[in-house]
Figure 1 (cartoon, rainbow, N blue to C red):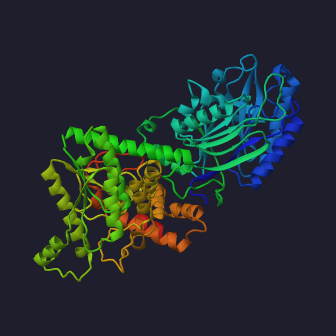
Figure 2 (figure 1 turned 120 degrees about the vertical axis):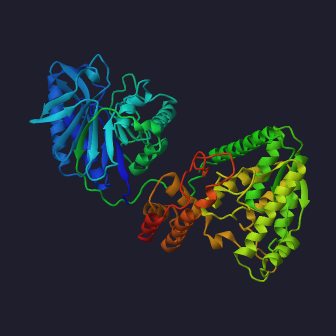
Figure 3 (figure 1 turned 90 degrees about the vertical axis):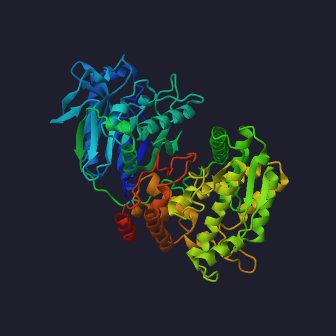
Length: 625
């Protein structure tokens, strides 16, 4: 797989202080291993050719000459590998010594980047910028260098000191603005109790702030332990997310950084419209097919860590409740009206509304839970609706809409035996009319229950369940709603409510618009539109990350390996693309609703797309998967 993924490696070699020949052997061995792993960017620690803790030996001409000869040796070795490498050494320029990172590729030094270092030994990194003569060639020298791959415009990198992420004035800012998608960070940081966690936090923040990849390489065994200990802490980050890490061991830490995503993400941000001055050095590289080593989550909207997932669910409920409470108070509403089906979405809306009433200091009896049985309603979902209302202390009202819908069929000349879209949508619109009229009667407003996944697919009846006075679930995908409801079940002390919530979680997702078969739900949504976990995966990758259908398909194959075969993934990918473009008109006129995550289809503030935009390019790309 390529699709913008660049395989990077942070190396931690065994260090031999001031023994350049031994260090070169270690580095060459790591270069060979990196080639075997199909690495495309290798980052080695600061001063790795000589060791970083050599003290006043750095002033010795013998060492400086040995370091330069070592660099020449590595340049020769780079002829036999396909990647670019960043290696550290002391570099003498006239009367000054610089703590440098050399970028080598294909037998050449592409550039020398001076970095921050102890001013007792090294000149300030901005003391000189231009070019220097190295091995008979002019080599760019300075902190303003961007290295750009000729074969992939998204793969660009720059070098900054490992301490840059901890600096008040970060040179990474200008390097990212100048176009570097990856910041290589050669470092030499000693280990202290608690420092590793601090380092993770700072590097995560650094890569997120720059919308960049970050490859941090630190030395370990062999550096002087006179006053400090070095753990070889190696880290790879992408936009705030840690992809790989190792400590207290030598070797390579490898993962793939999605440079195509990083550049797409930057195009969404207005602050990247600014430019920074830089010199760009181009290099050729054959972009090979890669098998991803990094983890691709099958549930990208859901934190995989249980503690983080619990915290996320609690926060979502609080955001929903706070938003709805504000709207209740602003409109001086006397009640909130919700159509309760016994399904996941209406259950979450009911929970959020009950909490909103608490915040607004209104009695929960002002929560009007309306169950509206009709042709497809089963006793299971109806009973769950009743228990939910009881468990939450809401006012329950039942309105059987069967007679009204049959009268409507007679008015428009539709046979109730014809179970088509008219048969289904008439029920959805009748339910919305009932809710709206009850809201008028009781001085309240209707709380919508539709979720983000349904909006992406257009799985809503226009001016039926599509419409409300406030859509409290509108930016929460179906897969995440399940976890929020589970959180509510796990944290309630009410036995009736917990029982109902657990059964709701166990009930197949269905609009219940077709008559049941032997008392069971006949119409299962995921049999019709496809598994929501696949659709939410596509929603995240196509909409949130801006991936092509072909790239999303390959990632899904990786994430759902052993769960769905290729034909199944391809089928529902095509369905997602087709429905997403065909159903934009429903998203163009959505009611207000709280944004709780990074994806929202609000036509006012988040997703602005013509209702008649063509999806032909995406459909063609999906067809070619």
